[in-house]
Length: 114
Image (cartoon, rainbow, N blue to C red; front, side):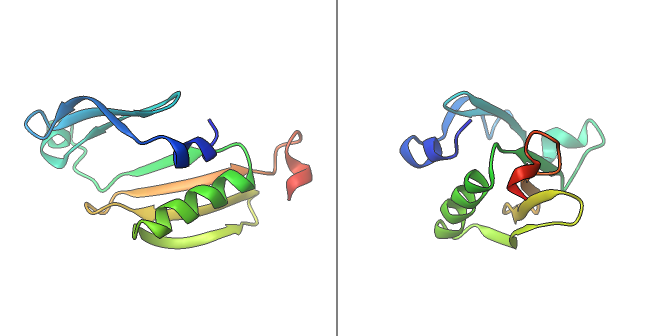
């Protein structure tokens, strides 16, 4: 998935809604299912939750950071290379759930981007 496409297309709510407490959203070939706190409580997962988004490059991480930051999202940390081999940032949604967006530059095939 290229985050550059996130600039061109918008996220679609494919199904579900507030009355169900569960929804499927998509953008291009990426799909995500989201559940509100009332839905999650029946599973003992009331949140907040941590969601990891693994992107394909530092540029994609930076692109998504700029997009979310310009939309006034709650940014917890700026993008930076971490000693554990990830280039990452973290954002929070209004419910306090965290999105950790990263690119793994420590694997052999991507280590050249460190």
